[in-house]
Length: 159
Image 1 (cartoon, rainbow, N blue to C red):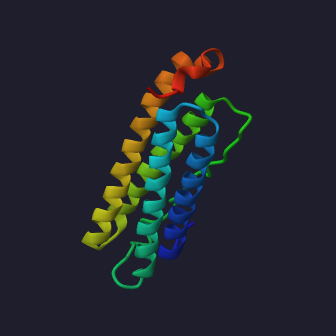
Image 2: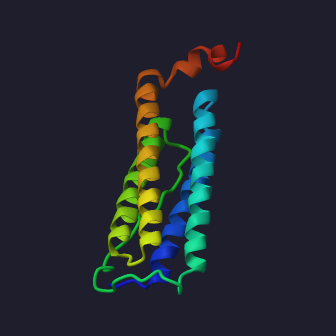
């Protein structure tokens, strides 16, 4: 199935909206103040990505040309928050979504014809990769200390 430029940009927009909401909900699931700050940043980044996609959509007819034969199966999995899951599972799901988003934007950057649009998509791909690495570091810590909050309630209290 081939997608139109509008279809592809709507897929990107939906993905950024889902990620923004997911990180806000994930923030509500943890008491770790440092991780909450990082989740605020991730949510804010996704909101910014959404704004970039929207600006690209506004300019859609002004230089966003995508080769139809190359735009065959560009899709993004949905990111669904399940509050019953442990934090580590939710972070793994977010990491998978960041990998998919990076691949999506990288693929899209290879088929757009405008240099400005190509640069924007490569930038978004690199941001998604940085989100993955941030989550990966948090996952490592959480896997070692996932239950720490349960036993040491004052752990996240500041000086």
